[in-house]
Figure (cartoon, rainbow, N blue to C red):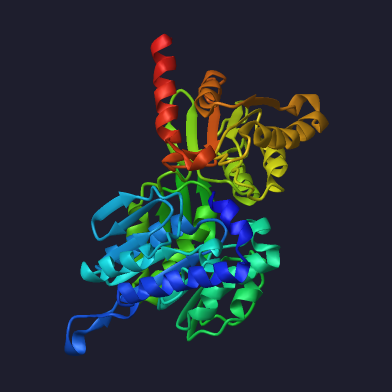
Length: 449
């Protein structure tokens, strides 16, 4: 019904509708990012940090909050994983990273009322299109990376990038930018009082003129975590995947930009055991089962590279079994066969299943993903040929992945992470958790054996 109404309303009216909602929300909650806490010379405003990019936003937001808390600040967090104000944490069950209908302004007001000095927000391109970043005084904007996503919604990659750029256009104080991304130059063009760049030493030549550059060197990737150095400070992280080095560097830059000592950043990051639904190990023996949120081609490839036989996580003689799907709702249909192709390139057993079909036929989505997987599988040499399965029921798909597993194998379930719902036709939401389902089906198999 909602989508049907949108078709008959001119786009400029929808644009004004979203703008007015945000404006009214800001008025209702008294522009919370401008409010001052305390009195006289001690009065301070809530500092808002916005993190945008295609991948890594949730992890970066979590890491930033840990650094700020380690430094003694009270922080609020709004991400696709959860909402947090001080020690009060509750899951994000909205299926929406940047909530509308006054909710962001309400959240910021609650943060101010509870005495938070910082609020760290995930900022999405779709949220920006609907003006949800408006009337928020961002102290710092963080760019993680950019790859094709939401292309159909934005009308092209350039417009998608422009939407991300609007966060930097409205943030005048501090910009923090991934210097190893191909779109670095674009984001460096926006003016700011201070610019921080982060990169892996030797990965790219220096571009632009950030105020300060933070480099990670002497990288070591282990099955249990990561090790790198910044200056002479050694960081030992329990996070899996070298892409998490970039997330950590972004968070460290935020800390440094706020006057937090590098040693404090180190202490905070080394305490982090993991991020919910992000490369989360849910079963460790006799085979490993990981759950990850990856739903873009770029993110999926990085996950598979991390877990492939080239790493210390998987035995070169064992199998990698993947469970994946693609989101419905008419979103980025172009990427469905691409996801299938990537899965077949890395995985020995590819199980394609339902994800969030919304009003689309879930079997049609599965077949579109499978088309890409089968194309690659057919062209592979026999010794590397992937088996491709199409299983509509996501629980059955997860169950099959476990049944196919032998000791030493690796199972990776992607697309939903810790999301609490499967969204189906008619706006209905089915309670769900990939991690819980994997554990339940594993326990059943163990009992049978």
